[in-house]
Length: 130
Image (cartoon, rainbow, N blue to C red):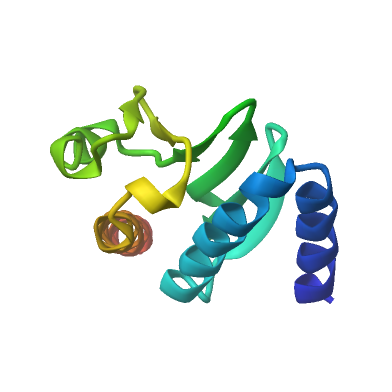
């Protein structure tokens, strides 16, 4: 049921996107799903958000003219800033017009690091509780 609900929610979001953004959006969401198959997908703050144990992992939002990829670790994001060019950096996200100008391998590396760091943090919380 979770997968069906997630796919319907995502399809509704996709249906509202301009045609030129849909392929890039779907490609990034597919990459996120590949990197974090154990994450749940929900719609929070008006965007699809992947979570593990109710902790925000990463999100993707369509904005007029660009996509924004959100991650919870601004320090990690700053380490990737140069490699994510020509993206524009925010405090918790980066914006790009289309994937043709981006290095998808760098995005995959960043998303993998975000997941690894969050899983490590969650494991430490569970250990500290015992």
